[in-house]
Image (cartoon, rainbow, N blue to C red; front, side):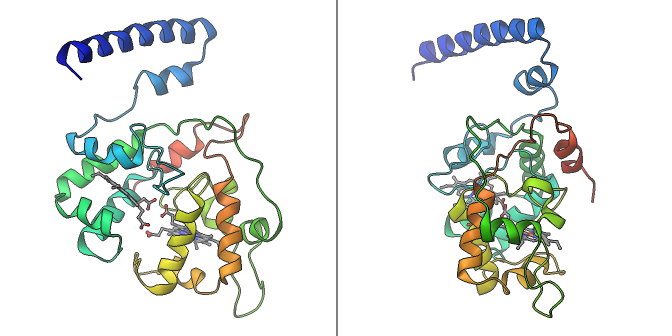
Length: 240
Ligand code: HEC
Ligand code: HEC
């Protein structure tokens, strides 16, 4: 793009923004205004320009390419993942290379930025499939036996929207979710000393993984209409 074209583009954006604010004021969608006008959004660190190609300019990832959404995830969680990619306890060639150059200070800024981004509404939330995936998510498996798998929702929240450091699963790419569970089985994804997910993943069969990943991938990453919109945001900011 030429400088002129960029200026024109920026001006068009400004005009669109003004019109949008007018619309928002007229209709009274204060929440939409806060999200789109950037209220409460941390400044984008320059390093995030290189992340946008895969994770999207809005941080919502790319389902077709299996790049996960980062928007609205807990800052402490994001920071920890970038640390793990840099130091190799979470193995992924693309992200190991991306994280290698990031200092602790830059990681914190990047994590705060993505944590502050609103979760862009999905155009058409898919109907969640029932069956085995829903059962694992809501009730778990083999309850009462030594092989018990706890309900995923007990940590990842109702509808998989996440709670603090238990990340959102709803709307993440299906193959991405499945790959994480397999990574814990194989030991290529590490985590905090509690190893919560490693213990859980090792009890899941390939069919269980396919079903539960499909279930969460089909859920909307946004709270259902009528649900308190601020709940994921508030818990995403839980310190610690
Ligand atoms: C070339 C594509 C690509 C680029 C560029 C890229 N990423 Fe990623 N990112 C990925 C892929 C693929 C994964 C999933 C890795 C896995 O399966 O473990 C990922 C995963 C992540 C995760 C883990 C998300 C989660 O839910 O656990 C974080 C955090 C992340 N990337 C941050 C960044 C940041 C910050 C940048 C820019 C500095 C960046 N990425 C640039 C492809 C990319
Ligand atoms: C006891 C709490 C707990 C339960 C129950 C639980 N998880 Fe998790 N899960 C976690 C934690 C903690 C993390 C973050 C791990 C890390 O720091 O890498 C996580 C992360 C994940 C991730 C990675 C998300 C991402 O963005 O990379 C997936 C996928 C996942 N869990 C799936 C599941 C599934 C499927 C179930 C049910 C079978 C489940 N979890 C049950 C605690 C839990």
